[in-house]
Image (tube, rainbow, N blue to C red):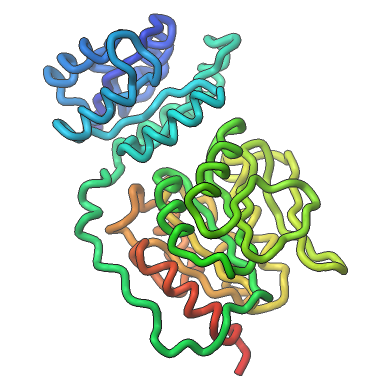
Length: 353
């Protein structure tokens, strides 16, 4: 017998509550056990039903979604999928929600809502499955302490390298932790984080405000410069291209790969065409297998690849698949990845010396 994922839907829109209920109940492995029009009603429904997942609107009457989330995570930690509008205010609030402990978010359409929600029905159900399987932030207190940087520094960080990172569910906070632990004197870093159009620009801005590195949304054709992190925009695949003047970003709106655009596999495969040993690949928390084959291609081309370990992942899906595909050299806790990258970047490329 299938173990149902029990969901409470919290949204002040009766239409959204109805659409989400129909989409969720159409899947054989999940069921809406209660709905609520505001957080005060939601508090009672959650207490009564003890759900596996709560979908939570951001802007609601009587108490905003962030304040309710803050209280929920303090009193009864529960996997939460935020429902956010595709606006600047909506994206800023969404990232605050992820910092407070929400697992993932869903972009709420603003026009032709019924048809738009149905078009994303499979994605909605996939997100609910990922959120239900998520490891909440609380257990990460027990991750091993971050190791000190190596005392014997073989030399400066080499700028003739490239770092490529892929992430999905739980990746916004994992990326923040990883990138904030890196110095400004890094080679170019390319990032694919599964995220809808309209959110990646705000995400890059938030990271730019807290990291020593410069962080920006990638633009088609721009040169890749040291000390800069390039986030794939939510509407396009991100590739790396060789030019006579150096490396450049390339964007395209081709078909989704592994149901994603941007896709981690697309980035990794493009980087595998660079000179052997110049690339470091990293795959972080996320559901699914996007990036697994691309990471295998990277390793076959001479890259050194690191996967986040299960204990520190919100969802141990993408790293697990990359390990199974044979593309990973090391599996490390999140806090250990930055020191290991620095160690590798100060040493010779694979095949040198």
